[in-house]
Image (cartoon, rainbow, N blue to C red):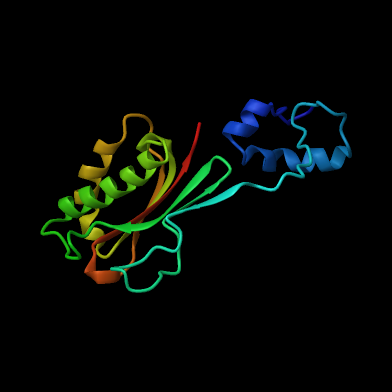
Length: 172
């Protein structure tokens, strides 16, 4: 009895990790005929890479060693952002969460994306006790499904920030 499920091109686009599950049977079968469901064609194309806000500056003093965001084909990677106000930590965790998520939202919108295009978000928190405060704000930024997410206790963050947030979005 065959226990493998044939992968369609739609499944591979939506769930690229599914190709890993198909790899052992494909390797065992050898070369498949062109057009076979589940076949993973060789791609010679080089991915398109575009840097957004490349070589950002801080207060006009020198160049920071990262780009604000990077496109790789249809995937958009947003660098970690802080939610400071004029370089200062806001009074409340909720205000800082609002600021940082507004920043992420603004970067996405500048590229024709929305918060609902995020597929992965990583939140670094100087104090995990701020988890509920962050979530009370975070959940208001999405209308569809929530992206996969990690909320990591990081210890001290730059400039004394409570949160640093980075994300990955996919143009659909």
